Image (cartoon, rainbow, N blue to C red; front, top):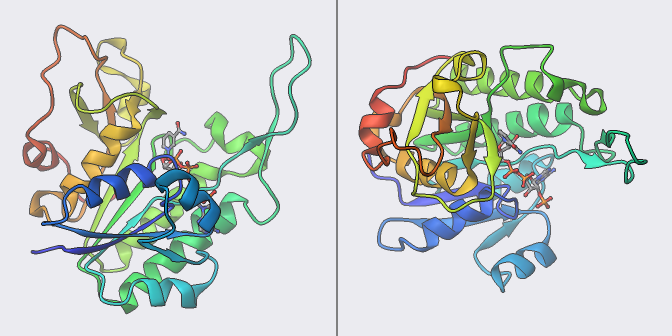
Length: 257
Ligand code: NAP
């Protein structure tokens, strides 16, 4: 399967922008197009407003136009909690979602819109980046702003799986803003990495490694119709073997939620 033209949503986000940059670094293989709602943010991050389609994931027609002739869709949008105010000393910060930015709207309806538009465009693959923790309704992330973010994300994953579109669902551990390509990646399922992390390692992964996984998954038959959790071993872990065989990594993963 050849994947050339790829739409990346959330392209002005922290991981989406890394995916788009990686696609642009491989012009022989890919034609990457960013989907974003803010020209100002695109300019700030990329130095230009070119290479983007501007729209909103709540606007079905903008998604349908953006996906015309695309081979693949990468979903990297997400509701993002914001701190209400700097906490008083000794207090924990409180978080909330902006009006219109609640997980039900962004992570469920907004992702459903993207999947529906991808189906209409008959794309060959949808790569969705989500989060570990979705098997636990009492996960602390669900209580942020009463948003139930992991529950809505999980619902969208289920919708994608049942859409009939070829999918790759990457559920990341805690995201780190650290350099990628320096760690061993570890895959599993059903949040077992959270409940029983190998050797008690932190359940995190650099955003750059997630972005590389997304790019490696595009057009890779071993990554098709797979859903998995992923974390990384620490950078200088003596037991770690740097991940370079992505096909082999995807081959260890399975289909279904
Ligand atoms: P992020 O920086 O918060 O980016 C989210 C993106 O979604 C932004 O680009 C935002 O646009 C876009 N977006 C939100 N609503 C939109 C709308 N209505 N229309 C168009 N775009 C919209 O994301 P991230 O931190 O890189 O996370 C990537 C994924 O990993 C998410 O699914 C997240 O839940 C998951 N994850 C995160 C963590 C963590 O530790 N943070 C852990 C595990 C998994 P703007 O740029 O205009 O704001």
